[in-house]
Image 1 (cartoon, rainbow, N blue to C red):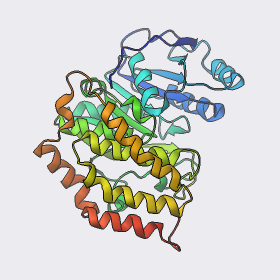
Image 2 (cartoon, helix red, strand yellow):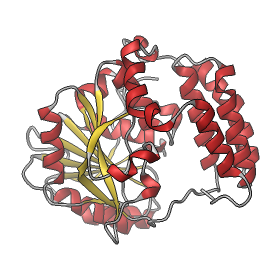
Image 3 (cartoon, rainbow, N blue to C red):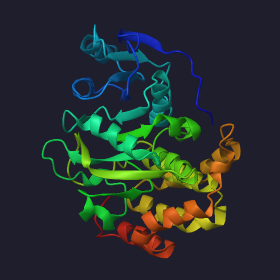
Image 4 (tube, rainbow, N blue to C red):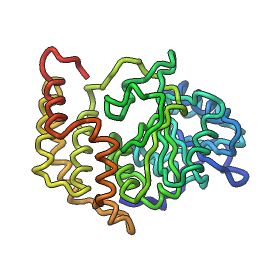
Length: 344
């Protein structure tokens, strides 16, 4: 795993880069969904009270959709559309998009999301500036159409959901809308390209926490996400495969013995069987082990993969304390997979 340097992507439209220094880079990954992506770009460009540049990184949109994005960004002095050589996934795409800019804060906005207010970006940057030990700021994710809580994007212990409007330290963040201090992103090695998508935020957060930084959830800084307000998981394609593979791989990366991950892996298999994707889950285990054996930390980040006592205490206080022990969590996974339980 390494954080660049990456080949210069093809410039498609917009400015070649910012005219001068900026406080924040807004990165938006594009892969079709042109209408939503154009709205996300407009939302980012409309942010006020902060100097920023918007980087739209296309990973393989169809020609007609790329043409629409090109038209939306043409002649924009504060936005740049580039095209990568292939689809690098969420993790790899964000790495490459982040490397394009130089702002001290990087705000990642999903291409089906928009900033809630015109000063959302400015408030996120101020929040990071005010507390230098925060590596990443997790935004509140709301359903675009209603403003209700997007429970499908709640990435924290369920016990904290009633506090969604509050602020508290967490152990991960949700990709739909978040801000990362560039210094921490670079010093911890960025995202792991091998993950492709799923769990990449958790993986980064573990390294930041082990480096002595915090991840802060801010319920007063929000983005609106264009999804159903109902909990959803697409039991199709390879989504479950990536979910299981990446979570086991991350556990191995941070020093957990394969045997200690077996209860979690078995619980995933029961849940996968219940939802008709058992083959995906079974295939994920051996692949996770192969990924772990190939893994090499970025130079200078080796120590970040050995969680020290302070990091373990942080994880216990801000996550495990709200979830209960492993036995309780495995039991919850199993119960959720039984016939008659709500599908998730």
